[in-house]
Length: 153
Image 1 (cartoon, helix red, strand yellow):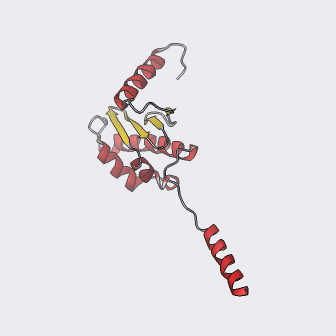
Image 2 (image 1 turned 90 degrees about the vertical axis):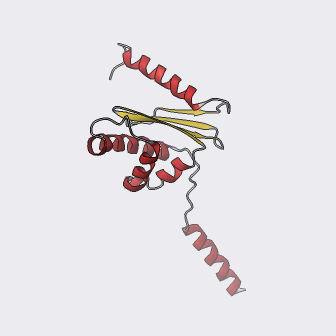
Image 3 (image 1 turned 180 degrees about the vertical axis):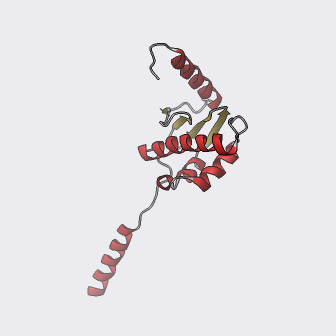
């Protein structure tokens, strides 16, 4: 009986020490990591790799860069980005916009690397909604806000 009890306690104590990471969650930690890393990466790439314009940046280059040069706090960012079922990556001269769709979570994340914060999380999405439509609507709203004199920088 003592051996059985010891074995059970050993299994429970070892089991509680092991941490498992649920990559398929969209929590505040992931959103902060994504937006801050994208902001940092776009600045690094703009200055060091792409000579002042990110127009030619590709999604594959971005993924490889984030895999190698991620910050310590965003250790699993690459893996969590790769879990997206659908991705739209749109570079522009000063940054890039990335849109990630997670079908199991029924969410879309939009992040513009020019800002240090995630820009939008859309929940309960229509499965027929295209990421191109999401991108076009985001750009339309963002450009309207940018040109609005009431909006402060």
